[in-house]
Image (cartoon, rainbow, N blue to C red; front, side, top):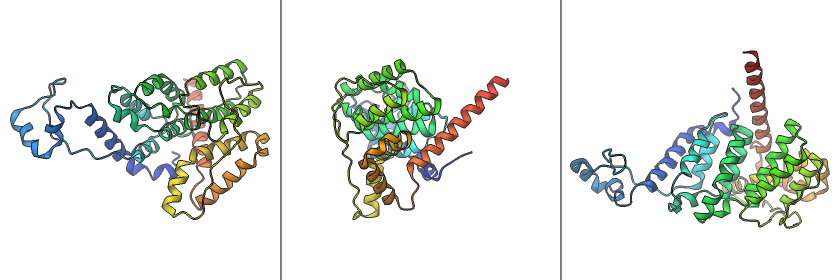
Length: 312
C-alpha cells in the first residue's frame, strides 16, 4: 500500500496525539466540581474509598493524570497520522464540536491552520473531502458563538477550499457553470473573516472562472494585489521548519495556480515564492508533489473499487 515518508514520520506520534486530544476533551467535559477529585493526585484515595460516581453515567470515578497544556502541533500530528479512506478525522471532529460552546478552551483550540490541514489532508490523502467540507459548513455558527470566527477566514478556509476545487474540477472534468457559481457563493458566505491579506483569493477566483468558462460573481471580495511573505535564509533549521509549516498552504496554492493555469505565469510573485520555499526545503520532500501522489493513489483506489462493484 502506498505510504509516503512524509506521512510515515507521523505514524509513531499519531496515536499519542489522539490520546492527548482525547484527554484534553475529557478534562474540559468533566463537571467542574469533580475535577479536583479526579485530577489532583492527593485526592486519588478519596475516589477509591468513598465510591464517588459520575452523576451522568453512574460509573465509579477513577483518578486521572493532570492534564498538561495542549500544543497546537498535537492536532497537526493527529491529522497527518490518519490513514486513507478512514473516517477517524471526521469522527474526531464531530466529537470535538459536539461539545457545548460554553467550553471555550475546546472551541478556541482549533486554529485557521488546523482547518487548512484538515481540508488538505481530507482532499489529497484521506478522502472524505465532501464530508469534511459539509461538516465545517454546518459548524460555522457554533464557532461564531464560541468566539472563534477566525477559523473561517479567506487565507486558510476559503482559499484552500477553492484550491481543492480546482484540482477536483481538473480530475473529473467538471464544467457546469451553475454548480461552480453556486459552490463558490456557498463557500464565500461561510467566510467570517474577510481580510484578504495575500490577494491569492482574487487569482483563485479568476482561475476558477477560466477553468469552468464563466465570470465569477463574488460580492464583497476586495481586489488586492498579490503580496506573499518572504522566506529568510538566515533562520535556524528549526525556525525554517516552523515557518515552512506555517506557509505550507500558501505554497500549495501558489503551485496549484501555476500548475493548473498557464495564465498565472504572469505573476512573478508566485514564481518567486515557490522558488524560495523549495530552496528552503533543501532535501525535504516537496509537500505539493507528495500530496499529488497521495491524490493519485486515492483516485486509483476509488476507480478500482468502482470497477469491482460493477463486476459484482
